[in-house]
Structure formats: C-alpha cells, structure tokens
Length: 477
Image 1 (cartoon, rainbow, N blue to C red):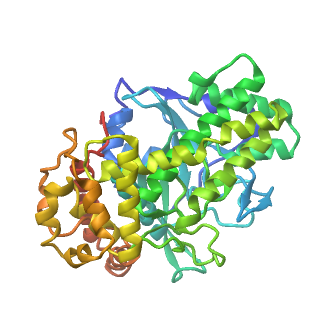
Image 2: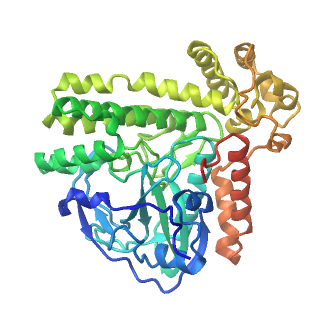
Image 3: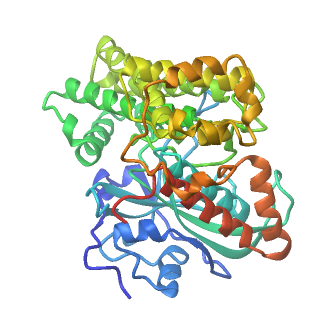
C-alpha cells in the first residue's frame, strides 16, 4: 500500500541552492534483506502502511517517496576533526533521501542514509556500511531514546549482500544500508564550509533557512539579532542533549563539528559506549589516544564546537553579542543533566536547588563507589519507596559505601512522578536493560556466525520495555 493520506512530504533543503549539495544516485546492491524497521516512527510519519516490498523499494533501492526529492542529495560541509580543520568532508557514504513532517508535532524531519554508495565526497572510500555498524547504530539509538536522550532514530536497516574489507573488524564482512530519521542534517560544519569559502551570501541563506524551518520563534528582522538568536537557540539545544548524555552515562566517541547538528540531536554513531561505572576518563574510540572526547570532557567539547559556529556568525554580529549567546551553556547543560537525573529516578521534581543536590550526590556516589551506573538508576527508580528492592538486589553492597549517605539524605521528601509508570512490571526484575560493549559483541556473534538474529531482536524488545517503563516510548505513534 502507498503511504497513508496523512503523510506530509517536503523538499525544503532544495531551497538552499545546488551549492549546498550534489545530486547523486544510490548504489545498486546485489541483495536486499530487511533486518530492521522502526514501526513506531513509521506510524508517526504515515509510512506504516508500506509492505515489505515497498519498504525495500524506498529504503533499499531509494525509489523516491512521493512529494519529496526526485533524487538524493549528498550534503556539503567541512569540520574540525579532533580539532584539526578538514575542508575535504561532505556526505561520503550517505545522502539526504527525503523530507517530511512529523504527524505528532508538525516538525520537519529528514531521512538520511549511511552506506548508500559513493558520492563526490567519498575520498576514495567505498561508500558502504558494514552490517555490524548498522546493528550498532540501531542499538545505540534505541537505547538512547529509551533513556530520554534527544537522538536521531534508526528507521531502517537492510542487508545488501556485499563483502567489505575493513581494518577495524574481521574482513571480509557483511554490508548494509541504514536510514536514520532526524530533525535536520544541517551541521556546524555546514556553516563552517561557507565561512571558509567566504561566501557571506550563502552563509546568510543557510542561517535564514535554518531559522525559518527549524526555529521560527527566533526570527528577527534585524540580521545581527537573528544571528545571535540562532546561536543562542542552537546552544540551548546542544546543551540539553549534552546534559542528557551525561545522565545516561553515554560517550558519543567522535564529537567533531560535522557531527553536531543544529537541532541538537545526537547522531552519527561510530565508536559509542555506555559507561560501566562513572569514569570521567572513559573513552569510546580506540583512536582517541589523548582522551579528547572522553565522558568527562564531552561538555567542554560541545562548547568548543559551538564556539566554532559563533566564529562563522561573526559575519553578521559582533563578538560580545555572540559570546553572550554562548554564555548560558554551562548553566543550561547542568539544568538538563539535573532534570534528566530526576526523570531517570522517576521522581517528582522539587526545587532546582534540591534537584541539583540530589543529582550531585548521586553522581558523586557513582564515582566514589564505582557502583554499576545503570543498575543504580534502576534500583532507585521511585526514590526511597524502592529501598527494599534496591537493598536486596545485586547492587546492594554498594549502598553501604559512605558516599551513599548523602544520596539517602537528598532523596528525603521526594515522591514518585505520577506521570511515570513507577509500578511497571519492568521494575519487578533484578537487573535493568543495559548495552555495554561486551553485550553488543555477544549480540553480534550469533549474527556473524549463524545468521541468528534472536538475541538482537530480544535486546530490542528489552529496550522497548525500558522505554515504556520510563515514559520514553515514542509519543503519537
């Protein structure tokens, strides 16, 4: 069946002009085997009526969705990679396939790809994605959404029947094409490219396009005020996501400026990790030898990246005004971190001061005791009302650590958030859904060895139960 009548396609990126993208064609793959489709988000955009053959036609062969782009667009951008400027970037193994509106809130959404073939920006690469890389991204986005993090959504994963050679995993290895759903694929690096080229007219066109379609509430007829308002809004969105990462114990791994979206969404998952325990020096990428993108340095890195965006906007506004737009970052990130911790504990928020005291006490306990990060959040969901469950579970000995006394004091007076399902069956189990690196490898092994997807599917079902239990299941689907 075709898309539902409610499906609302768009093609607004084309308004920017051809200097911002290259029209490309998708690779022709020898095989198309559907491995994952996000039915919840398919319903939310009106594509849940597609049968398997139609799904593969659109998200494996990239036949155009009605009303959107006639051909895919490989986006052009630059970026700082580990703080070294690289003007040779751009979509090298992906493209913007289609745009549409979220039927729940009317926001503009993008379908972007990973592994869809070579483009003018492939830089000698094969434009492909390993199946393992696709599996890892599906898992990462599912878990982050379940933990309340503002993330892109993995929409489709199709195995494509090629054998790829890679230096960081056993080769030859299987291939796949991933489609992700995001609120924009405009990056800090998109602005950097135009600034580098000294294309002030193009830079203003991108600025105005971004405001008009993604944050119309900050529009101002004065250009300088428009630029500073835009920077302030992007700063707020990125700070919010950064706080959510820290509360989720998540390490992105590669926080280059081309991986920071103006929507603030977390996206483009390569060597990501979840913390086993609270370790500020924990890194996700084996090639991050200096720990630049370690867990504890993520906030600093996000602000550094935002400062690069501010540098691009000097074409329109003065430095003091742009610095003022960046200044609230630390406070906003802390507020996001605190709010996410309170929600992760399933509690009714009190004052910002009290909430912050609890969040600090809990984070300090996790560092000093090295208690398992996710187990602790799970144990104390519902606050002191869950004490009997917490102190009889597998993590009980950690709560004898002296640093937990401050957590216990800070929890006094908190009640469960009535909007969250504190009594959900998920909390009758002994251990939470987790996604540590050893688990990911254990999920991949039967796929690689026997084409056995049962553990992968079981993990996704487990994560879906976590999302339902914590009130983070997709709304409006």
